[in-house]
Length: 304
Image (cartoon, rainbow, N blue to C red; front, top):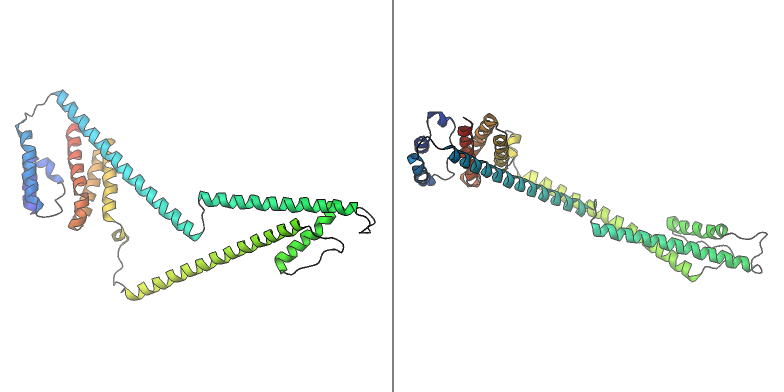
């Protein structure tokens, strides 16, 4: 089969052009069809004279570089699309763990903070009004000096933090009664704090369950899989199809910069990886490698 492929290529190229061959087709049945198709495609080229006009050469050169630019642009779009997909998967993973928030969640958190600030301002305002009322009613509370807003709000702040950390109720100074709005605001703050504590507990339990499941799954997989006698190389774990696509992109970039020798070396490494693939994977990159071969050969002829 390889000899047929070599004979087909030798029809269209000289001895100097046979140092590196285009990739063989991924499926053996396509070899004869490919040879016939190449003969039909190349037949008009044999009939053309060797000495072409300069205008025709320039037109072909423009078409060649246009084709290379289109291929390069297509490769860049594929790379950018894959980068976007990887970023999205990484964001979703962090969001599921609770380590990052979406814009809607950030807005909701900001709204809760503003609401908490407003409640605190309301408590302070009510406390100042209560202190003012106490100063006016001197007959009920006997004091040697007027009560300031700070003195009136201090017992309430102490009571609030005692409830927060100990959970026990403490009586205020005798003669001072809490307004209904202050009591309601304190209850709302206490409820918000308890909700925040419950959310933290839920997140902690979720993380614990998540890593416990992952650990059990890994242990089961390790038990069911036999360890190989020889550890595989790191290069074998990579996706060879993606590696070929990346090298094709590098080779075309080298052609754009007129680095023909670099492009040739990269092409040889691509062929080496291609020959190790199975037929199904070969079919994914066969056409791209074949196009790269003819682009490189055409560029070498124009440069020579």
